[in-house]
Length: 321
Image (cartoon, rainbow, N blue to C red):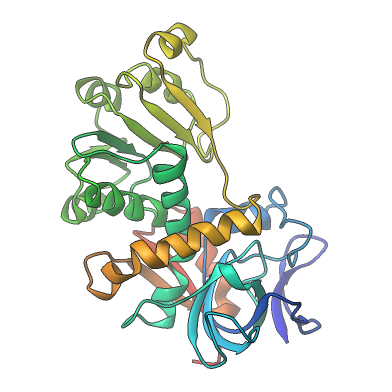
């Protein structure tokens, strides 16, 4: 098969590699589409390698056709599926633990299917399991709200009855997240984010930005608030008033998805299929596709995310389609 590997200088290299060999309990998938995540950009930069038991090239989610599966598996050869991966999605074939593979929601394309596993697993993990769920009327704060994770988080929070504060970097993105259901939208390039947060104390925050402003905003959390850190795109240093933490009983939670066990990921993917997939088929939830590129144009596709141009997902496609 061919895969978009990384050479010794961390340049993309579309080259032939050995076909993966399916182990017991795994599914072999012919990949038709693979979505891009910021973790892929970090891996391309040499600072976020795949776990050791996964291919050492990019790709955390993919969609395609099942070629082989265990005899008692919930998916069969010929099924259209999407999968959560630890790495290796930028390739023509991939093997995945069976529990991390689920059918694409009925009515969705391969491109749409590829855009679901990573972002929705991240949102479900953090808002349902790390935060202990969102309750009707709670205030949810999401930064980078026009990203794939951001758009998923807005929809999930609204589904749970929360009030959503969404932070974005342009008026175009602001209009989009308003239409998606965000109640309050901050354009961080011109609005006073701290004042908005102070006037609407969040019950739950999902933070991929971090940086200097994080500590100041943390002080504005509601009593028993849960602030979940999943990345630090604006830097890893801030100043936190520890007295606020204990007085307000705030939980500061660090979380990643990629390093979790296959068993944990299986549990999340099965929950997504059971609890949310019907809403995608009914178009009550969407995964907005910002752009689609052939795999050979992966540099251009990554550049869209690096420039923060995207509203939703950027997806790579393979020649099978």
